[in-house]
Image (cartoon, rainbow, N blue to C red; front, side, top):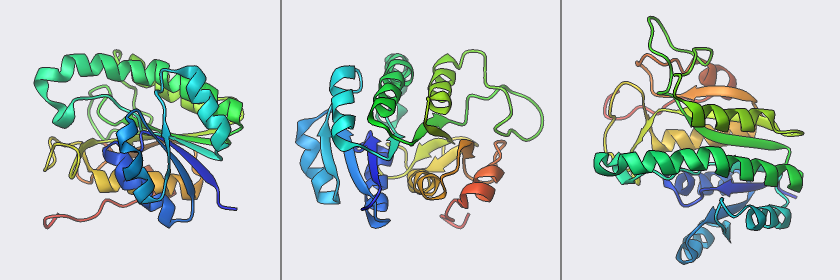
Length: 235
């Protein structure tokens, strides 16, 4: 029997890339969406669609109990497409709610369903400013409360081995950004491949997943996950 993965956020920018990678690697995937009209697209990728809102704790718990996943992957966000500046203030509020309340609901449901592992999406641009290379041990900014909550819930869930992927700013198909923006960037395909490697290697802990050449080090992800950002446009 293949291992079962419950992918929360399966129709997001990373989720859409990740589902076929997981299916191709032999996993059974249950993918969530809040929109019933997106079920067919998930089925077409080979996943079992799950229509559920992460803020509906009771429905979410029931969905995980039905799926009985070995691994839960948290790729949920609620930011405006392309990080539209005009909508970012409200987007940050919504996204913080997902990171705090949504993550707690997902962790509680994963524990109740007997999942053994959880992999969560975080960010690599919330570190405190300083000189030298930024690693996973560099302190986060004082105001990164929602990020700390998401990461703590993931890494301290009872009976679950937790992995946190601190992604750079996403660009590429489905993100609303065609090219890198700033020194801490990440192509969406590379984000999806890192999640697959986190599943396959069973690595635990925190990993920066960013492109080469910026202030944030990706050495740990390269060494332990075996991850490499693909070369693009002569880079």
